[in-house]
Image (tube, rainbow, N blue to C red; front, top):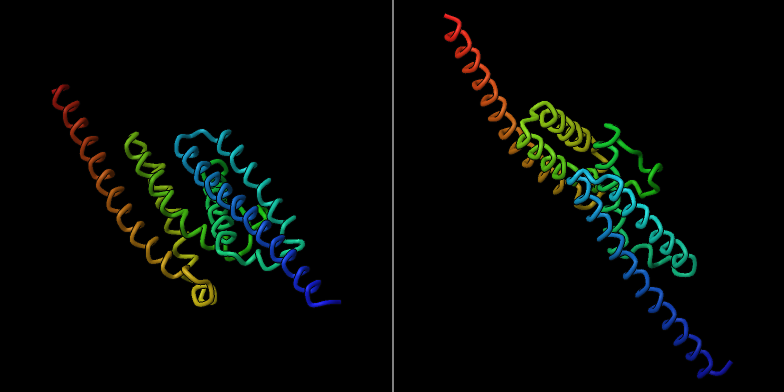
Length: 210
């Protein structure tokens, strides 16, 4: 084979790879956006719409599977990891809010590392849910969310191997710890306020009967 033919084949291969890369990046950006949209919809209690967004995300991941058949190296692109992580966060949050359980990595077909990083980020979303509950006067739900946040943090930091080998997990765990402490303060203040309000009402009723 002539050098010209060899180089021509290489040029075709590189062009095909670049086309596949562009398609992959476009799909993964959409997947990230849809997962973020699903989380936003969950906070508005629009769970049917959130599930639809996540179903569309699954379709985009199938495109990733097709592309990776001929371009395995693209599976390691940073945007792919980011898409799986955002999707994991959305699916874990959905499962907690709708079924009060933790979905498994195999159940949503994501890598273990993506699941761990997404799980750590769920703490921040649960804080938002807890604050929404406090605004509605639903202290019990806020306390339940705080307990789940505590459980996530405690289980993550117990994973010595993961904390050492999974990049970003320690930083995310530190962020989660700070979020939990702030949320604990918010919940405690509301519990005390609610208790004081109850005591005042009780005293008022006693005084009315005298």
